[in-house]
Length: 152
Image (cartoon, rainbow, N blue to C red; front, side, top):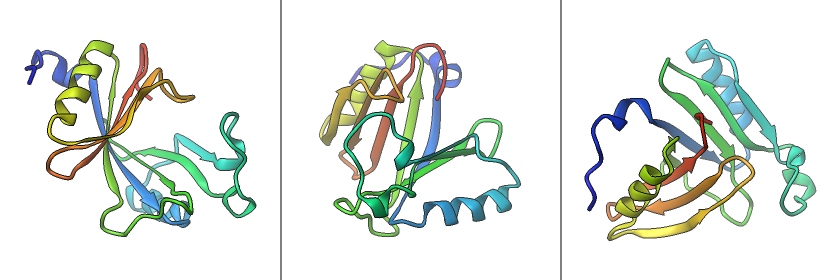
């Protein structure tokens, strides 16, 4: 395992909880918005996607990505899942890392994958220059983003 330079820990990595829902993401995040007294900084429905396959009609008004700050350093993020990939409540949280250093992102991805499972290899997406998903050897799921120059 590669050891990270400690100077990167505070200024180049953002960690955010990512919550998945079976269709009630908007309702849940509206409730959280009131609790944390904040506003959405991102709110995207499936029908607003510019890339990817056409969605079933019942899915078009569901949330593909939502985000809101709950502190100066943490954003609560989430989405509705697809009918093909429902989640069990209690197993619907993932930790999301967003990095601005590509080499560091790749090393963290490989370190977390060691002894675990790569669920989605690193690839370009419409929201990140590189993105991948891992379940580590302890069963924790991670989504890792690299966005050149800024946090998502």
